[in-house]
Amino acid sequence: MAHPWSARSRAIEPFHVMALLARANELQGAGHDVIHLEIGEPDFTTAAPIVAAGQAALAAGHTRYTAARGLPQLREAIAGFYAERHSIDIDPERVLITPGGSGALLLAASLLVDPGKHWLLADPGYPCNRHFLRLVEGAAQLVPVGADSRYQLTPHLVERYWDHDSVGALVASPANPTGTLLQRDELAALSTALKARGGHLVVDEIYHGLTYGCDASSVLEVDDDAFVLNSFSKYFGMTGWRLGWLVAPPTAVHELEKLAQNLYISAPTIAQHAALACFEPATLEILETRRHAFAERRDYLLPALRTLGFNIEVEPKGAFYLYADISAFGGDAFAFCQHFLETEHVAFTPGLDFGRHQASHHVRFAYTQDLPRLEQAVARIARGLQSWRPDAL
Image (cartoon, rainbow, N blue to C red; front, side, top):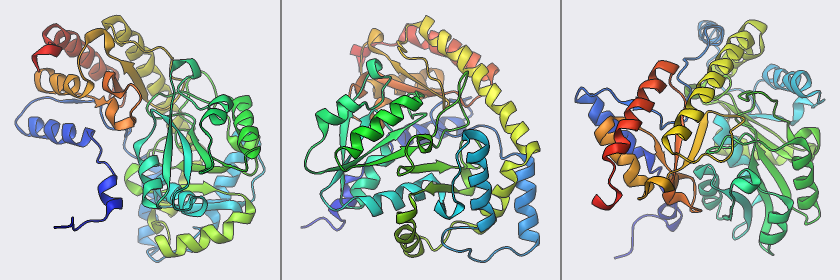
């Protein structure tokens, strides 16, 4: 009997970490103290000025649809943010407000990828990127990357992996799971390499704002034709509000608006009104304080894990992740994660969720817990390493 579900659906893999998360929640329900370093969600609740703006919007009755491209005043605020942070003059008409960064990715993939065509993606990378391409009947050409390129695509890799079905490349800066950045000149070189082949450059800038000791350049500083995905979830701490944006070339806006009308009508109205408060000085002050807290966590956890024997070759400059090679300990990454969850009640993510290249001996730690909890986690991991037996599973 034929399978009742589409080949498209069956080809899209689940988050493997969700099985670990479900088990972590079971352990928690049984009374165990689980330290969660597996999910890429800031531990801070949404900043008070943003919440207050959302409450005010509800009280004022702002519960109807907005235009498909979003509130004009929010698009103007985002354009102003680019002017302030990057000295870029962007027409607000080029900004589309989306349901999360995922909505921005769905729009870009729907616009740029025909069935059978593909984008080049770094492996390891965020898994939903390749799954969204499958959803629109395209594909991801996964490009193995390592510490030598800071886990990023390069013009040389574009040249090597580009073929007759390639139509573009999606890169992330800062990147999940590695936390690495693309410098301004590197973005420019990628843009040149892709334009020479008639390809599009799409850049995930979702972790912009969360950088440590440096600033992240926007691709729009060097390529006005690039597509930029961004989100209010990470730096702005609005994960559950489901709000993001896409900056597109002017010639693409009409087609993208048409897609938005059909795919989701509009982004959540209350979230859009709340997000207007993101750009107020008082809110930005709170967000910068939180950024400094993430920097302190990175500066503690990175050397602590290295001391325990985890190989983290490239220091992450952004996001809130450490991508660690566990080869020194032996065994499979998923089993390694299971061991620490069951014995020490510390949850982190196996590399299998981020691609195929060397995935079986990498894990990702999200430093989305405060310093005392991270210190507890390191102590537990140190103890758990003593009982880890890769050949016993």
